[in-house]
Image (cartoon, rainbow, N blue to C red):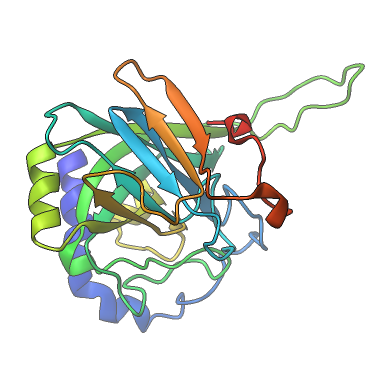
Length: 263
């Protein structure tokens, strides 16, 4: 089933014109009126996991759809050290539903000026160039039903739970070095969640996506414009460091203690 779904997603590029002409383009599904995270869009974060550094700049403009980190990051690694460079992609939050779904984590080396698929108008559009799209990971998400929680002395739990998925990905040092030599060191990543029934019917207007994150791989230290760096050692321990060139007093929105950022 997984192979079939992957082929369906890629083959459906051929039917984009017909989909774009349908009345579903740009419309929000009935009953969903700006439900926010988990309903209209997902959040995507990249967390260093092993032998890798994530470099972030606070100068990036604010985005409507985003996670804990910036949408533009550098991934720094030691090109001479053939270690396992592991990054975790964290997708949040998939709200409970009574239908099976499929979660895709996809990337492309190029972006598209217009979306290839019609999606909900409340969420992000698919910004990847689909003719060069590759699947990083694909996962079956079973139906997650609502619960019933009794009233208690503190209040009442919301009956609709949401799930978060972490996708661990091992990057190949040789492939990263080749990308950098060829001047293709930047990739663009998005997560997409779609019902199994919609995927098999090639109906993408109800698909919800994350923001598009841009990751640039560098084989040395973080660039000068880095505000925060997050270094993962071989044991998965993460050290968060604020750049000495950044003055937190000059930016009231900056975090004077980056170690408080939650993963």
